[in-house]
Image (cartoon, rainbow, N blue to C red):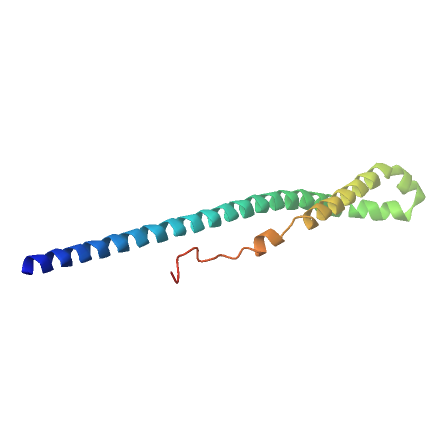
Length: 128
């Protein structure tokens, strides 16, 4: 009788250990999938940030160019003779401003909603 009770207890403990191990593995797999998805989204965000940084650097250069040539532009507007003499500088400044505007339009077209709609689910990690 004692041997039978010991055998039944051993089977019950072994089954319980197997069940806990199986559930642990299931939750680990779910956690890894969730972490993989988070990593993928972070990589996408990093790429967008790099693109944005490059655009901002380009636009900063254009803004500095306009700032440096601002006094010359003001002089061009004051006098017909100077306006004719500095026509090239005005064209270059106008081109720089147009590039800045087109760049800002590109930035405004970046779909930011894909980064704020991420809703992590528990993927079987909690409450199962």
